[in-house]
Amino acid sequence: MKKKNKRILALALSLVMAGALFAGCSETPPKTSGTPPATNSEAPTDTPNEALETDRSKWPAYLGLAAGGASSQTGIVGAVLAPALTEYLDISISSETSSGMTANLLMVDEGTCELGFTGTDFAYEAWTGTATWTDKTCRNFRSIMPLFPFIQQHYTPAASGISSVEELEGKTVNLSTAGSSTDTWMRRLLEVSGINCNITNLSPSDANQQMSDSLVSCAVCNGLAPHSAVSEFAATNDTVVFGISDAIYDKLIAQYPYADRYTIPAGTFEWQTEDIQTISTSCMLIAGKDLEEGLVYEMTKAIYENLEELCGQHAAFTYVEAGLVVNCTTPLHAGAARYYSEIGIELPDDIKPID
Image (cartoon, rainbow, N blue to C red; front, side, top):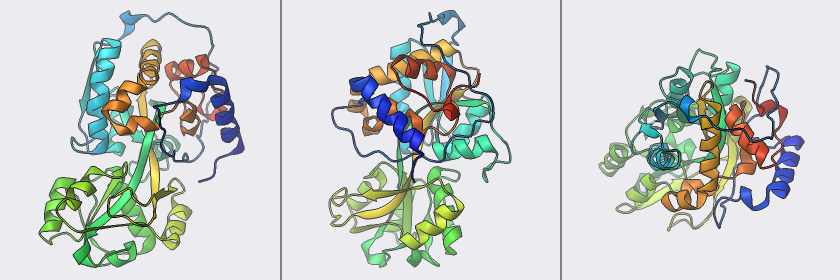
C-alpha cells in the first residue's frame, strides 16, 4: 500500500537525524508498509523536547500485557517482552493470554490490561468506528510502536492437490483461534472471493494433527515467515505453501484497504523454489491512554535501547525500528511521543498525542 509523501519524507528525515539510534539489530529484514493514515479528529498536542524527571511513585505495581494464545506468535513474543520489561523497568509485567489481536485491543481499551499487541489495521478500525468485529468506537488506547509484520501463510499436505485459495471451495480449512488476525483476515478473503468452505478454529498444533489425519485440508497462520506451525507440519509431511492471486488481492483491498502485498522470498521454506505473493499487516504495541506518561516513556526507551538483547531472544524484534513509528495509524501515547521527539523524529500530525 502506498504511503503518503509526508510519511516517506518523515521517515527519511528521521533516519538521517537519528542515525544509528534507529537501527534494530545488525541485519534488518524487509519492512512491510503501513496501513491507512491515522485518523485524529482531535487537536494534536505537541510534545516538548526537554527532559522530564520520571516520578516512579505514580507507577502501578503491576501491568498486564494482552498478548494472544500461548502458542501464537504474539503469545510467544509477549512471553519474551514481559519479563524483559520487568527487568528493565523494575516493575512486574505479565503476559496475558487472549483469543487474538482484536481481543487484545478491547482488553486495553476496557482497562482489563494496560498493554497489548494489536494490528495497525485493527487499531485504525476501532479508532474510526469502522470495525466489523466490535460495535464500539474505541478511544481509550494509545499507540507506542510498530513491531513486526503479520504475514499470511496457507499450507496444505502435498497430497491434497490444493495450490491456491480458489481451490479451497468446499474444503475444510483451519483459521486458527476465532477472533485472531488469521481468522479475521482469512474470513475477509473468503468473503470477497465468494469461496465457501468449512471453517475450523483449532490451535495450530491441533490443526496440524487433523491435517495429518486427513480431517482438515488446509491451515492458515499469520505471523513471521517461516511460521513455526508450517515448519512443524512440514517436518513430517510433504507440504505446499501457497499465496494469493492478484485477482483476489484486488478484491480484498477494494473492500479492506489495510492489507499490504507481501512477497515471501524463495528459500524461506527449505522446499520453496519460487516467491510466494501473499498479504501482511503490522503488529503494534499499545497502552491504555491513562497509563502514566513517565512509565510509557521509560518503557519505549528501554525497548529501543535493548534491541540487541531482544533480537537474540526472538526474531520479531529484528523488525523494530524507531523511524517506522510514522506507520502507526492512531495517536501515540504522550510518553512514547516524548521519546521519539528526544531522538529527533518528526511525527506526522495525525499520530501526535492528543492528551
